[in-house]
Image (cartoon, rainbow, N blue to C red; front, side):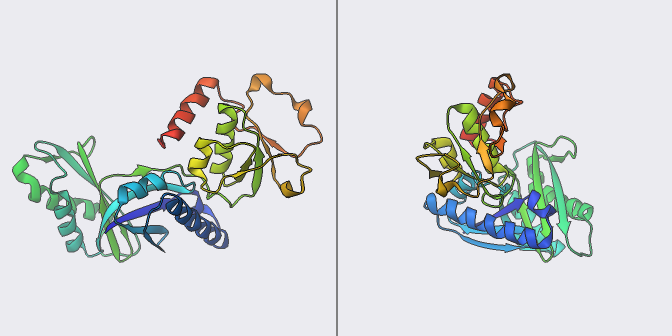
Length: 281
């Protein structure tokens, strides 16, 4: 089975009780996305990272790219935090991943107490990789390498990988309450998506393929009337609006109205939606 290391970003800035609640919600959201995508995986948590064991890592990465709160993910090869084991694992990992004549670099980071520094890890692992592949005529280039190997050490475990897969980031959906969104075109779709990224559950008045990609349980209502009992306790309404059509008088006396795209041009909206639909961040 392959191992995927999953990182979050903003959650780590929260107080301990809030962070634990957000981590729990993020775990639930990841499992919900996997279930919708018919993926089987074993997920554990430790040292501010989620670890996923799966037989289909590429499909899992595709799913993780649609989970708010996940900053990035990497397919990794685990090892111990022993420096010799790290170097041996890095050398084995590099086989077939660097081509003849290429330059390379090793970027190491660590969390915890160890007898070595991150610079030492980079130097020693880089030497091991060089010796393993010196017949290819490779060389070290720390500024603009053709190939970069990453080593992340967290307490008594190490992880070797060569790619960060960018994910949407933000806050786990469901941690910031509920808003209502009327879907009337690209700008309103993007506005709803941006509120999802800030941790809100968005209820909509019509189905949308883009939003349902990111929310396996997207709720569609017949009416978004705030007087409807089912819509009680909402934070507010989400609307897609440009600055040219903004009229503050229309919002007097209503629940809060969120307009995330008000400062964006139509071209910026289209470009961002295109990236969102292809999960390119």
